[in-house]
Length: 111
Image 1 (cartoon, helix red, strand yellow):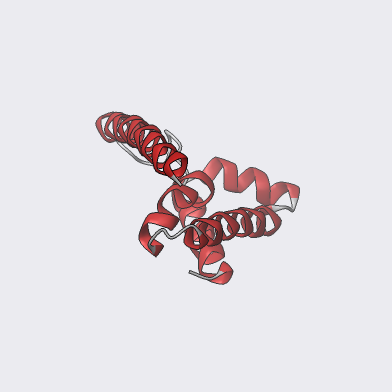
Image 2: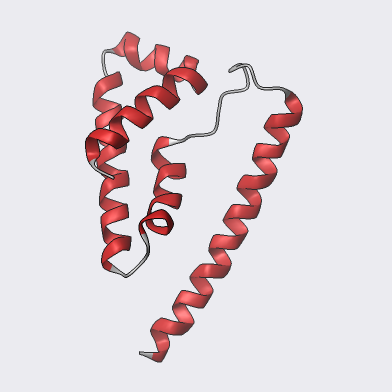
């Protein structure tokens, strides 16, 4: 995934799911700058994880959630039930990643 694809993904996602954040950034004249910065950070993390041997889908998952596919704003048209499901899934994902980090640390210690 190249930086341009990440920028496009961030731009589309933010405009649809983060209308207040997008409006603020546009009003400040920094929307494109923030999109580029988020894409660059995600791209750097993905590249680092690929160098560590992760598959592309594995390498992209966390950086996309952290920088690009941010949690939708409550007024973005999502029901309370769907927002609750998103929060629950994010908590499950965070727990899974903590477990994966422990496994990775054990394998690193074996080297």
